[in-house]
Length: 324
Image (cartoon, rainbow, N blue to C red; front, side, top):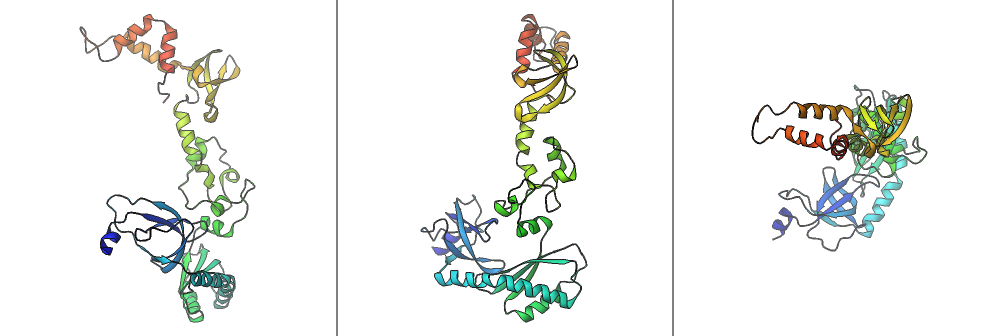
């Protein structure tokens, strides 16, 4: 019965190992009394680790490879965790001294030393751009110095900024150090879509990579632009016919040049002239497929719409025709 419960979980717990870190899913079907905030012991690829319950989930259908939570953390486990965390700074300093004595690690930056809750494993986080760096010499030296199993892990620029912390260009603590648990792919296209200057100082974060916040409003801009005409499109406005100079997605409006005067026009007041003229031309051409009888190409609809006047055509187009 126990094996069947593990093989087909009915409840999952999201466990976080760092204050601002990813959530990992574990089977907690056999522990119904768990609540958010509880500390638990789980088995990972890096041995037994202590994490904190952050959320509960329903398991994905058909997936059964979740590892079970081993047990609740005891007061002794929590005391051990605090004891080893207090030694992390001292260990990091000693690691830097050993690297300096060995030599050859001048281009390597050692960022943090992290013990497992029981001190059985020591992880040293470092960053470097030296692709030929031999880290094994230092690993062997550390293994001989500390009783724990030593692991050296290289991290990228974004993780470096997350570990160091500090203030962002916006004047508040960095997103990666406060709430971002994962880094999303970011591209220059996102900055272009939002009309942000491509000046490196405007779009580059403290880590030297594109700012994480470029992705926050990107989808909203994409959806808003689908409903607005592109630049240089000919449109009809209450002020007359003109050309679109700029698009303002968040205002649901565009800047239109009419007789050398700029106007900010809302989307509901716009009529796409290029598309409207193409529609009228197609309607006047008649139906090549159905010379008699019914028509499924839109020509008869176009002729009927024309008899009702240009104003009705404008309303049809304004009702949701694509600007693409």
